[in-house]
Length: 424
Image (cartoon, rainbow, N blue to C red; front, side):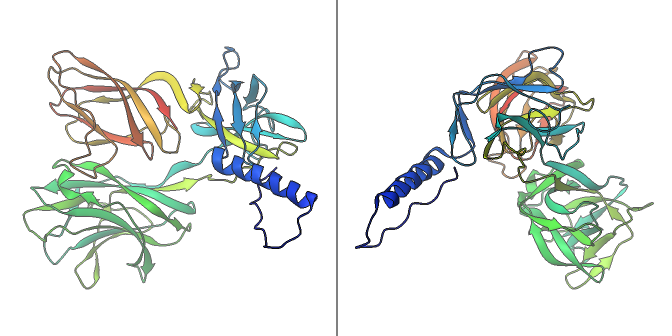
């Protein structure tokens, strides 16, 4: 039963027994929805199937003490409910969807007139819709009146909101101030109205070697496929011919088909015979919940499972919102600048607290630094190892927003970072 806000009584109103019973019922449902919260649970144990012949396709709800569903009803489900991705409907995959590899799925509990059960729904993803990575040149920004801002025209193939973009930058000497990205509409082939503005980053934290930098839009712009837009990199650092930031570009054979590089001189946008390096991501499949017919009285999202590139579920074992997986090496190599690294196959597409089990390096007294943003010098680096041994047990939990982090090794030695768990 969905909750109804309790009525407001009118002074002097005649109250019948029926009216009072309705008021009591509405108060009860209101308390359930607002005190306990919907789609919450306790004592939950969820995992990929412990049966070796089913673990690649099936998740099992071993037990839950209680699940508060979308209609605010508190349920104690039967033990050992299952969902098999090769089955359609209840006990399987949402009937309107087909199994997809390299995809996150939501594990849903639902109930209705036909009983109760689990089913799987494809989760949203941050799809790399447009990218151009060839580079042999730069646009130098805020070095003088010629280029105050840089821009790259683009069109998306998939309509939807853009949560973040990546651009390849390199710092020259020591500029100070803020740098950010904008998505702008088009007017006659030039950037026009600002549709979205990213977080503003500390420009001094950009490396003096080439690196990919992620700009996050907390209020994303919803873009329409096949429509001209422009990605603009802007800043408030002083105009300085010695201290500035370069945006990497391709000048020898620019071939991006849906736009070109441009420079803002303070009055007009000048066409520039380059294509800038960039990546634009679009949020896809952010669909409304659709429980199977007969099981649609109430539902609750109770977990996540990843279907890998071979269409096999990746092992997990969850207790409430804490999820453990096999220890995974998420990065390895020798990098001396903050390096953007994806966790899209390890944590789901929601904010999580990520747990590292170990950081290793092959250099004595090497520093390994990890962050989820280049936003603040005071808050950016969250872990440093400097030991006489070659490894360090971390057991660190850190909040992540968009399935990515940065890391680097201060001394330049090879670094290995191991993931163990997350909390959503």
